[in-house]
Amino acid sequence: MNDSPSLRNRLNEIVRDIPRSGIRDFFDIVSTMKDVISLGIGEPDFDTPWHVRESTVFALERGVTHYTSNLGYLELRNALSRYVRKTFGAEYNPEKEVLITVGVSEALDLALRALLNPGDEVLYHEPCYVSYRATILFAHGRPVEVETRAENGFRLTRAMLEAKVTPRTKVLMLNFPNNPTGAIMSRADLEDIAAFACERDLIVVTDEIYGELTYDTSHTSIVSLPGLRDRTIFLHGFSKAWAMTGFRLGYACGPAELIEAMMKIHQYTMLCASSLSQKAALEALARPESDIAEMVEEYRRRRNFVAAAFTEMGLDCHRPLGAFYAFPSVARWGLPAKEFALRLLREERVAVVPGTAFGACAEGFVRCAYATSMENLKEAMTRLRRFLGRFPKN
Amino acid sequence: MDELLKILQANALESRENIARMLNVSVTEVQQRITDYETRGVIRGYQAILNEDQLDQDKVTAVIEVKVTPQREGGFDTIAERISRFPEVRSAHLMSGTYDLLLFVEGRTLREVAGFVSERLSPLEGVLSTSTHFMLKTYKRFGVLMRQESPDERLTVTP
Image (cartoon, rainbow over all chains, first blue to last red; front, side, top):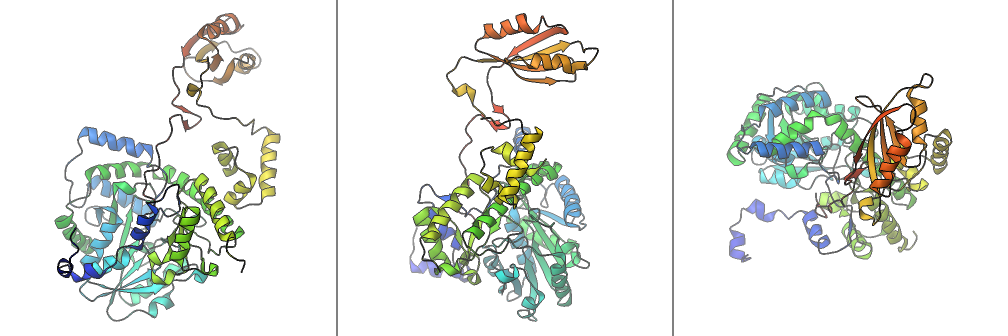
């Protein structure tokens, strides 16, 4: 590849100025090493349920290899509409209020591009998923980060939003259960946020990809609160709850005008999501409860195990309530998060992701995904304990 | 089912300390509950799950369907328990359908199993007929696939 400054200067300025994901850099280092136990993987270690894989093979044999409607198979949108009503408490018309996308990532990109004019401000909470800031910038929006804090369980409050809102604020982005913190929002927490969104007339874009994965209380979606459905784009997908990351299948539900606008971009850029993945998703929805219940139970055990191990070794960690991440503070060990993660990797071959990959405010934290086998978790905790033991007592 | 039992079913060697961490309870409580299950006979024992096809040993397993006459007192239980006591019978189940008992019988050779069927099982009072199938290969046992799982294909760090 040619790195000459002349070509670099010809790049789109927004793209040129956005750094690569911090995760990507870290991955490049980890992938050169052997015998690493990775707590850095943001995807389930479970296999996609066998009935889903088997029916995908069958669909391939039957020749389901063509374009689908831009919105996606109507059969799938019908099933999704029922699932979202039952699980998240909002009604969507499958004919025009549901759009099947290539993962939640595409859906998020479509939502922001459909909504933003250059300079429109988007409130989003940090630490957050690595793509949010970049996706807002690509859509010519102005990202306005709102810091959440460990002492507050990384929840978002109305006061935090009030401090950052301006007349140019158009969109509020939410992601609970949260990657990377494992935080969730109670119904009461969300009611405050909902009231704020209504008063300020904001569009809410809520990424609920981890919605099925909560361990002590059940999840409340902001779309289920009065008045929110008509100003919210609800994003979800099959990656986490069904362990289908490689299928790249997500969906957006929202008021018809917004879905129509998103569909236009999708139509011209993506055409449709993979037909095979759509068939797989349809099969996944045929028996969601049993598939998910087993995984949730296993994640809960691992969450308990990791939280107990952290406490025993003196690592401060707010209790992770959802997703499959623990987000302990390593500040008292006196190293910046990245340095901590690098030393842990080199000395004990355990990969964790420095909090700074998820926002500058997450300095001093590392993300530990417990989406890995109990055997791996046990070994990782042994190594981590040994690693911390090498630091002088403080 | 109690989560504790699920954990033990998946790995009976799991330490009491780790089980306590997973269930968010004390080690003493874990120990007490296990002892209680053992005393009550809910937990009947602990065994290793072997891939016997990998062992160089002479052994055959037969699955035998047995039709029996239920006894006047004790129904199927009396005859089923009588049959179950033979050490060759590894498991025995009462079934619905065209036969009554399903047995898994082990022996060193085909001849040995055949001998068990013709000389011990069939002559028993109450046994009407048997149908013997020999097992050729095991793919899955007690929920465990016998073929080594393929390695984790996930990237080592993902967002």
